[in-house]
Image 1: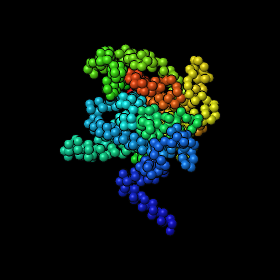
Image 2: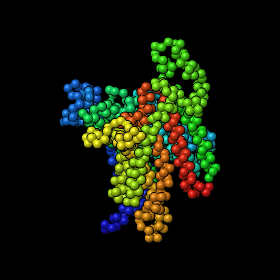
Image 3: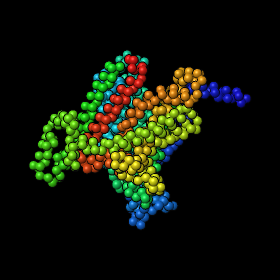
Image 4: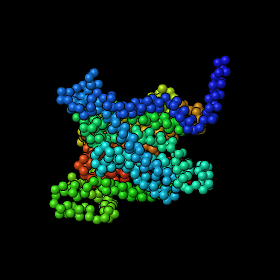
Amino acid sequence: MAASATTADAAARTARMVHESPRRAAMRRFMHHRTAMLGLVVVIAFILVAVFAPLIAHDRPDATSWSLIRKAPSWAHWMGTDENGRDVFSRVVYGARASLLAGVVAVTIAAGIGVPVGLVAGFVGGLTDALISRVVDAMLAVPFLILAIALAAFLGPSLTNAMIAIGVAAAPVFVRVARGAALDVSTNDYVEAARALGNPPWRVAMRHVLPNIIPPVLVQCTLALATAIIAEASLSFLGLGQQPPAPSWGSMLNSAQQFLTQAPWLAIFPGAAIFFAVLSFNLVGDGLRDALDPRRR
Amino acid sequence: MRGRLGIRILQVIPTLLLVSMLVFGLQELMPGDPAVLLAGEDANPTVIAQIRKELWLDRPVPVQYLHWLSGALHGNLGYSWRLREPVLQLIGQKLPVTMQLSAMAIVFAIGIGVPMGVLSAVKRDTPLDWLANAVGLGGLSIPTFWLGIMMILFFSVDLGWLPPSGYVSLARNWERSLATTIMPAFVLGNAIAAVLMRHTRSAMLQALSQDYVRTARAKGLGEWVVVMRHALRNALIPVVTLGALEFGALLSGAVLTEQVFSIPGFGKLIVDAVFNRDYPVVQGVVMVVAALYITLNLIADILYIIINPRLRAA
């Protein structure tokens, strides 16, 4: 009885796999990827913390108190207080807003520049592709963070400029990913068929190529989010991102450096927040990549 | 092979030219007039006009670019606005410090990343593989500057074993030099080790599934010999070339590491220049970094063509 039930289950599973679309199959693989699911739960937790920061934080992030300067973690102040008597937990909670916002905006800028340019390069080909590829090579020759630092330096220090700098510096990778995928998709029969039916090139690109380059772009977006969060923290750590007294994990670490011996908690908690946020995005990115391209596992 | 090498070398020229345009174009992003910035807000208009003339700012942008490019081709990347020294000379002074740090970081990266990748591939889908993957992913996710701060807390503040900051050159005192650079080098090598681990694991998995490995096993060779002499030797070819691409990550990491450990290298030079709005130094550093990166990539590609028998025969 049990054996026949198992056989029936297996048959049902096989039938489902035969009929399911590639998108649904990828979704199923992603949902069964345990570490990716764990990463997704942590990502959602960080998003909720950022959105509901005023409800979660104990205090305003900029509320100072001269009687609470550099107090060690306690029941009243879970992560202690800083050099101005501000509650570190509240600043870490509000800091999630700056980090996630910087990540999302920077990746939107990078994808907004990179995907259309990459699509054009891959779909049109020829001289256009050669020109775009050379410009991308030149931008990739400057290490990502150094390019972001240089751009932020010339634009001036602020969170907005840091997001623009990170987005522009990350765009060449999106061009490469979109171009590669567009080149691959353009050789498919359905694209040839769409052309043969007399569709103008822009419609073929938008209707038939663009939707099919989304999966690799999506993976790149998740991995780029992790990179952008670290980059924002790095720029803020160097003083080129979020400016004090607004809370940011990177700038909190910058000021914590002066009090390492007296107040080590000032350095431990914001750094741990960056680490877990980046780790969770990397886990989701790896899971998505495995789900969309199972051969890579 | 010569044709392929020639084409690869020639491709460097347009890339370098485009990088120079990008670097020069950075100054167009600057808010305000550089001459006013240099002379001060309240400066005499005659002084400002004089500075504009000296810096060629009164000419059209393409002319300014050609003037700058011609200087760069003759080894003149301009003068530091703050230190009044040639930019190239400043870079030359700081480069050996960063190179020492980078060389030590590469030793850490290879020493940790390659054995971990091999072990992870050989013991695929075992707890050891999962552990190696977790360590690798952790290494990629940990911010360089936070790892540096945590190491200072543990090894300098708590244990008192190593100095928390500063730098002593190898020529002056090699023991002190190693003591001051071992922590930053480990921090810098950590992220590269994680990348090398991932590359090595995937290259080893591919190599271990090849026919020549099956033949070596069928001949009765020990597993150690099969892994080290047959699989690893072939797997290392792509790892070496992909590893060369990590040079950029090494320089990016150096900026933050040198800041945390107060090491007077290349990274600290660009950060100090940024805060002092010493733009010629920022431009010079970016240009030199890009040229180094392009050269290293070229060497890696040439090595790949030379090492790989299929490309050599072509």
